[in-house]
Amino acid sequence: MSRSAKRNARGQWRALRTALNMLTAVAVPASLALTNSKTAQAATSVVSSTGGIPVNANHRATSRSLADRRRTADDRCRRRIAQATCLVSPGPSVFTNAGYRRNCRPGSARFTGELLRLYELYPPVMKREMCRLRRIFIEDKFWASGYALTSRPGIGIHRRFFDDATPLADWLTWKERRVVAVRDLDAQLRGGEVIALPTVDVLPSPRELDPLTAADYIVAHELAHRIALYRLPVRSGAFALRNWRGNPRRASPRALPKDWIAPCFYRCGREQSAGLPLSELPIAYERLSRVPFISLYATRNPQEDMAESITAGMLRARDIGMRVRLGPRIALDLETVWASPRFTGKRRAVERLFREAEADAQGDG
Image (cartoon, rainbow, N blue to C red):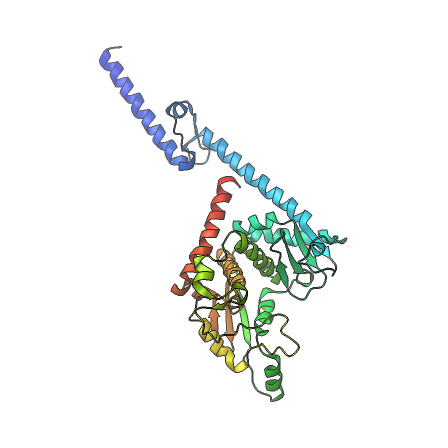
C-alpha cells in the first residue's frame, strides 16, 4: 500500500472513531462520561435493540447497577416501614421515653399495606424521611389526628383514618370548620340563620386511581414536620425570619395584623372561646389571600407554617388541587397561593428540598 493510501486509510479511521465517540457522548449522561482516553478507546460500542443507536456497554452496565441499587434501597425501606408499624394502646405521653417504648399490639401488620401504598405515592423527599422512621404509631385512642416526634424518629396517626378510609375532603372540611367558635355557631343555629361554613374541595390527580384519604395527608404532614426540623432550618429566611415575629413558641405572623389571633383547631376548651365568630370568617380568608401563608392552619406557628407548606408541595408534585369555599365563593385556592409572588420565598425553599431529594434518588437510590 502506498504512503498516500495509508494516509487516507488513517484519516478515514480517525473520522470513524470521532463519529463513534460523538454518538457515545450523546448516549451517556455527563455524570457517566468517560474522561480517560484509553478507557474510551477500549470501551465497546453495542447496537441498541430498540433503535439501532450505538450505546456504551459500560454505561448500560452502570445503568443496570443504578436501577438495582434503587430497587434494593426501596426494598430496604419497605422492610423498615413494616418493622416500624406499631399499633399501640393509650399509655404514657407519646412525647416521653415511656410513650415511645410502648409495646406493639397484635394486629400491627394489618396497617402496613396502607402505609406502603402511601410510600409509593409520595415524592422522594417524603419517601426518604419515611424510611428513617423507627416507629409509626397507630394510636388506638388519641386527642389529635396525628403527631410528629422531634427527638425520636417517629410519627403517629389515629387508627380510625385507616379503619374508616376517611375521604380527604371530608377530613379537611371537618378540620377547617373547627376554627368556628362553638358558642357563635350554636346561637346562629338556634336563630335559624343560614350559615356559610367553610368547605374544602380536593381535586384529585388524573394520574392516581385510588381515592385520596385523610391518612394520605396526615402522614405526609407529620413527615413534613420532621423534614422541616432536620432538612429546613426553623429560622430560614423563607419562613421564620421573613414571616414571623417574636419568640418561636409565641410567634405571630409578620404579614398579618398584630391583633391577629391564630384560629384554634385542637384542645380549644369546652366552649372553644378561641374560635373565630362566623361573621369574621370572610375577613380572615380575605386577609389570608394577601399574605404568604398556604392555609389558616399555617398561621398558628412557624412549625405548622413549614409543615403545611411542604405538604402543599407534596400535593403539587402529585397534581392534586385543593380549595376552600365559603358557600359558593372560593375563599382560598392552593394553586393560586402557590403561584403568587408573595409565596415565592417559601415556594423556592420547598422546591429546592424536593429537587435535592429527587437528585439523590436519581444518583444513588
